[in-house]
Image 1 (cartoon, rainbow over the protein chains, first blue to last red):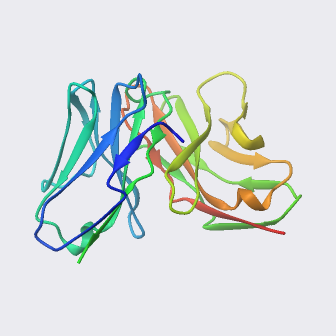
Image 2 (tube, rainbow over the protein chains, first blue to last red):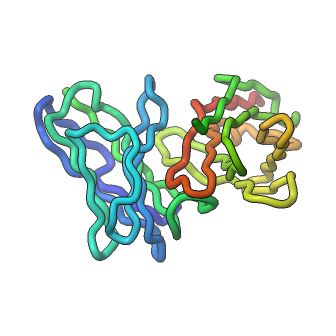
Image 3 (cartoon, rainbow over the protein chains, first blue to last red):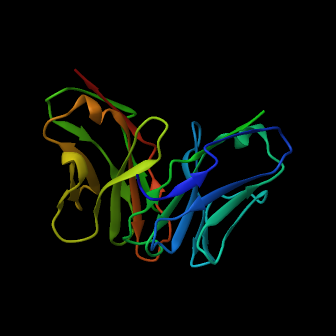
Length: 114
Length: 113
């Protein structure tokens, strides 16, 4: 168990809908990352927060947004969902942003868009 | 641009034999290199990392990796494979000032009994 929790584990929704994925980092970690894992794109970095502030953006679509709250949990919002958004979404946390710090991953949320 | 390559989609090895999972990187400057393992329906688990210093890094579950700057490689190794080592292995790279990891495409390790 990495200490990173994600809810829900599974989510099935229809095209055009909006969903929110939630992540709680390991105790003491200030940095949160979101990744998308799909069969055709592999593991893609979406966005990173550090102590409530956005620090880096990766391949995140404009339909997606995220935030980190004062208690350090983070939410990833996905809107106007398309079939191609079906994937595993991982949250990871580290004690500090980037560089040499290893990231610890949650179990993921499997999103299925029908 | 920084990247990592895992040239093998799958590696097959017999239980008890040594295993190697290959990774090469392309980063200007000094890289930080990581190995993660993913079991079915699970998140990625951190195995080991290279920051600086000794080129041979030891990690969890008996795995080790060797950093080779001249060959820009960071291959994952284990002296004696277990069936339970069967999983998907990812190499990743970062560097000073970079805030995220760049992952390779993954290598599926299959250990046969």
